Length: 264
Image (cartoon, rainbow, N blue to C red):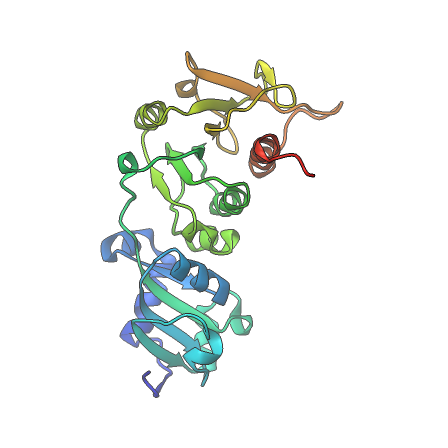
């Protein structure tokens, strides 16, 4: 590990981290991403993301921060004042990382049993929260369509607590996504306020894809037609809808409940 403490915001590694954190274009150009937080970095390592630089606060050692994870890449230590200007959580964080982005998954080489599809999800915080739910409910793939947010937006990573690194994900156009789901032999369930089937009465199949629309417009007409079953979430009086994260959680957990073996 480089024993010298970095103190200048003009240091090339420090500048690179800042650019990756702030600009999607830089992330795309460099094929890198910025990660803040011990758990988030651990999840990235568990997801086979490769670290290029690990940035530690002050005189900490790798062994103190990541005792169970052998790290490749270059380890740098930053003066506390400099580190705190880079970290959104300031002194509450103790590690930052620059990681290599993983290649897009070769979707047609895999078999997926539970897929979450998100159309026009524009808020990074919502996308991150949805990854937490996806991992907790056993989704093995997340697809986005339309003008959806960047998976590696720092707000998405932070809201996901790093789970974005644990669930395979890809962005497709709507027609590509539908073709892929059909090729996988998945039942396609769409979530709509006027859905013909109540969630609590529907028999959700083992291998399923669940499709949700964005925060404002809901699902487009691209997700209607033969082979798709529209679900509605029952609501108590004087309530007509839930927000996106809550809706996805209710539906995905109902599928988990139906597929779980009865308790003995």
